[in-house]
Length: 246
Image 1 (cartoon, rainbow, N blue to C red):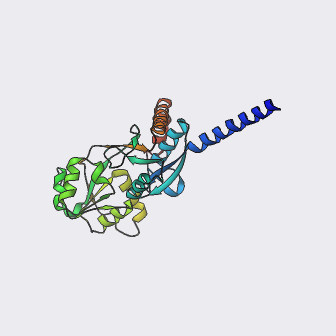
Image 2: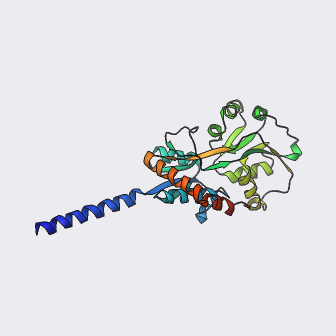
Image 3: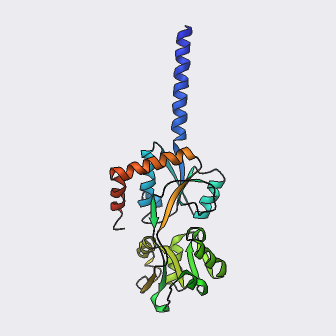
């Protein structure tokens, strides 16, 4: 009888441990809202979403996504409402365990060609009205941060689509955006503004590498292991190819 009781207790402990591990392996991960082709919020897919989900899965974890603006995600992370946050890095002002870089964005400055704006360096933005994505002031380097401090007409938008509307409506001189995100919004806003207006692309930035920020270092290490496995197997390249035309 005692032996049976000991076996039952052992099984209970074993089952509880595995349930605990299963719960712990479901990570609440924050993504920026509506950033095609990187994140399609209402479809649970996108280049960035798919890469993060696949790397987590390879590392033994599962994804529970949350979508919000960058500033809100950082507040949620600091308040313990998220286990991890995508599209961040050590330059951001939040304490986290940062993964290896899993994606790069190519940020550019976009202006209407009709304004004849010439930009040769970031400081040339000082005299312009500029709309950028949230937390660009942290992620685009010291020269950019200095420009932000000098420019009273600088703003950051919680919804990235707003920047495109402002530009084509002539409400700002320039916007700072990832080139693919900017292009992806054109068909979505064509009924509201004239997206056929010629634009000028100013290439002032090197590619921006992004990491996933984790609350737990062990989860970060599992993600890095999964990311390396994705690259080695060719699955990383296959995911990227899926969105190449978007």
